[in-house]
Image 1: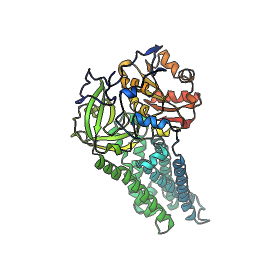
Image 2: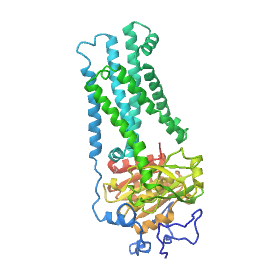
Image 3: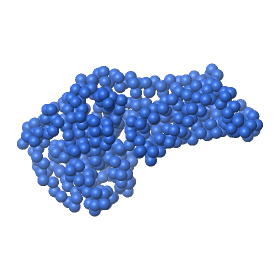
Image 4: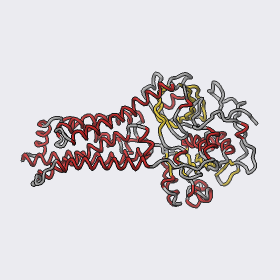
Amino acid sequence: MSSEDPYDRPAGGRSRDPEFAPYPPPEPPRSDGGWSTTTRSREPRSYAQDAPDHRPGPGGGLDAARHRETAEVEPYDRSGRLFFHIVFWSALATSVELWWLNTPSGSINTTADILIAGGRLTGMVGGFLLLAQVLLMSRVRWLERWIGAHSLLIWHRELGAFLLLAILAHAGLIAVGYSKLTNEPVVAGTWRLLNTYEDMLSAALATGILIGIALLAIRAIRRMMNYELWYYLHLSTYLVLLFGYGHQFATGQELSKPGFGRYFWAGLYFFVIACVLWGRIIAPIAFNVRHRLRVEDVVPEAPDMVSIYISGNRLDELDARAGQYFRWRFLTKGGWWQAHPFSLSAAPNEQWLRLTVKVVGDHTESLQYLEPGTRIFAEGPSGVFTADRAIRPRALLIAGGSGIAPIRALLEDLPEHTVVIYRSRSEDELLFRDELDWLARARNAQVWYVIGSREDPAPRHLFTAKGMRELVPDVRRRDIYLCGPPGLVDVSMRTMRKLRVPRRQMHLDPFEF
């Protein structure tokens, strides 16, 4: 039995040392129709004693996990989400109220008046939704803790559709209404409108950019683009905010004159811009100055997978948890301009961080050749795919492909008796098997390896309500953590709905951007 620390790794690390065996040798897995499992026996010795944890105190490691499981599971504070809802709808109602107060009784009599009033109203709503969109993607930590990274992404997409409809309605109603008011054809009236009023050309340009961003959001188009192109094109949202500001305050009837409406909207803009500056510039710079991250080692895990070990200053003060991700920018000659999100594949500790990357493109392929000492500019930590979001004392973790990275990290942080289902097409594609087997014994957990194609009988049966209940009888009384490709997440969600697992017990970290 090795007495090495299970979290150590061979120095130099370009290939694993065959003599290096930090984990206890796994028992032969028992097979059951395409499923295999590793579980701790009833009367085992403590493998945690054989491999003492070098990460003292809360924040990661087996000691911290054992300490947490002695207390009751404490649900995270959901009051932040409720507060955000209240503030959002109150601010939107205030914006509509400004339109109402600036529309005198009896001023809407003709068709042109109705169209222009509708254009003003949709303009106010559209402007507010634009600010909300930018705020949702500002990366301020308090908002992510309140809402959740996945929920923020969903809200951002859904609000984007309403924003586009509001802005198109605003432009169309104003154009048609003004044409009727001046008794001109729509094209001629629109041209006159653009050349008469201040900042109308910038408003038209902002509308065009917004339509372009909406087209990029179509799933079929987004899948054809690489991450970098999509990301930098999406940043043009800030131009919409800039051009929209001048248009609103120059020609908006509610904002063009001094008064409550002008100050209220100026405050909204100030707050959103301050959040963007803090979340995307100030906080990341402060984080990197404090921790000075750099590549420590690169270790192959599989033919197309590598783990990158990262060292830095004061990692014991790093406010990160298992299951979270960072946006990593490796400061190499050809990669400094690209930042990609990768989850931690081990619970953070005071000596190093680890991320595990699947080679799927030019950028990820280049990460295999990173040299030790390469500087890193990171943003984060982000995400709420963490143990403190659990509301039940036990958990079920479901992973597919490289989605095992945050799941493997979470296994360190969750209480005992956790069940892991690891879906893979073949045994050769399994990652961290030695680590998972060791953690299963040390954490009194079960790890099920579900191997085969989606058409094989065993995997198909498992991801049915009956199969899942057979494998995890108390599934409804567990928190469910899901991370993997869309197909796995979708089928797992359908199975959980059939089992009537409450939605608040579902925690997602899907592969999407």
